[in-house]
Amino acid sequence: MRKFLLSLFLLISVGLNAKDYKVSTALDFIKALKPNRTVIIQGIINLSDVLENDHLCEQLGIEAYDDDLEPKSTLLRREEYDGHMLIINKVKNLTIKGEDGAAILVSPRYAYPLSFLKCNGIKLINFTAGHTDEGYCTGGVLEFKQCEDVEIDRCDLFGCGIEGITAVGTSNLVCKKSIIRDCSYSIMELRNCANMTFEDCDFYRCREYTLIAASDCTNTNFIRCRMSQNQGTLFGLNNSVITLSDCEIHHVGPIGNINIKSYPTTRFFNDEDVLEGRGFGPTGRPNLRASREDDETDECGEEEEIEEDYYAVWDAESVEENHRKVFGNALEDHWANVPITLPQSEGTPNIFNLTLAFCKQWTGNDDDPRRVFFEYATGKRHMQIDKDGTSNISGTKSYYGDGCSINYNTKEGWLESDNNEDAKNLKAAIWNRNDRHKLLILVLEQPELEMSAMCYCYDYDPATRKLRPLPDMKEFIEMKHYGYIMLPKKGKDITLTVLATDGDVIFKWNGYSFNVKKGK
Image 1: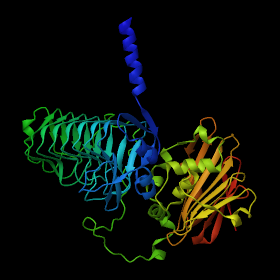
Image 2: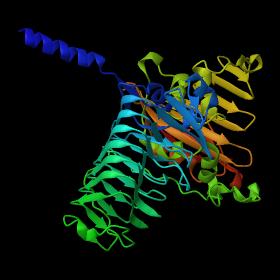
Image 3: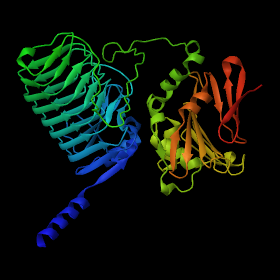
Image 4: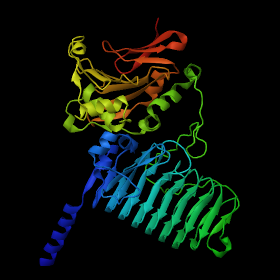
């Protein structure tokens, strides 16, 4: 009996000490990064939503990284050529685990999505990690410096990261049932590492230089791994020996400084056959790719000067391109795969708290109207009452400050968040559908020079309190236009102003969706 009670006590103690933190935003994710806990990712998060905001980073106590100083904080921010990256410093026993379809992204091409410095007992489980935009020169996907006891399980590491894994002075790393793909340069680089094991992993479509580079490493093992469609020299070993057990290699370029015949259980094929899936990688894998944009960067940071004629560039065929330039790629690429939950604490759904839920999930950078509204709604941004604005329409609340303005009317179901200095606007409206659901539509626009106006549509289910993306409605409303999407403040119809044709398209509300009618 005494043994039973002791066992029960120990079981309860373990349960009480276990700390799981579910997060669905970059802000909550970074706040949760502490020792001895499990962070569970829901949906797709872009860490740049926080890392590019100086005010938020200061509030979170994120220390600026200095190569010449010994860092004291567990969270560090290092400035890169095109943005910032997060470094997790001296953290023990941290597990980062994804639910179905989870992903961690960053926007700067020169930054790692996750970098660990002097950490111990790190577990990365069941998520995708990579970049929104493709680039070169620096910035892989996972970085480990002077770390011990690392486990990577069912992860999908994709480019533009120059390499999937960078490890320096690291020991006892196990990577299993994971994927490294589409990296700009190599698959991995290992320096001064010991006891590195890659088991049941697939490496494909990485494309330059030495693909698996190991320098001054001991006991590096590849077990049942597959490699195909990679370009470059496959192995580059410097004072290092590796083992290949039951691997499958498809490669038409140089093999490098190993004798493939020394590994009798490994099969080699001089081809680029596409690998059939083995069910590895994260569950519900979104299969993300970095956007290949026209990059005017020449040799690693030297920008070519280009004279821009905005009026020649921006036309009806370039609406999406314009939009991505102004508001980034993450929202347009991933919003359709990410439902949003309205917390019970927010009470009855209305235009204010539903828009806040959207902005919390897709916050944007410092000057983005989504961030302006998010900071105002959460008390992080002080704004003054605009008495002139409140007098126009009964029930309207208006605020202004720092070149920005916010106006909303919960009774009429509309909201505006405008960064007037940068001419970037967020518009939102809500409709009651005849199935007792609600329809939420948000428009992001930049109306000056770089004309861009695109919408994001959601169905709100009161039973689940979830906002479900409606990509078909988005496409239906946007059409192919160069102009404005005007949401109603009175009435229920949407007006699409197509400047190129000097005409309007009216979307007439039918109680559930819209019928199209040509305007004047």
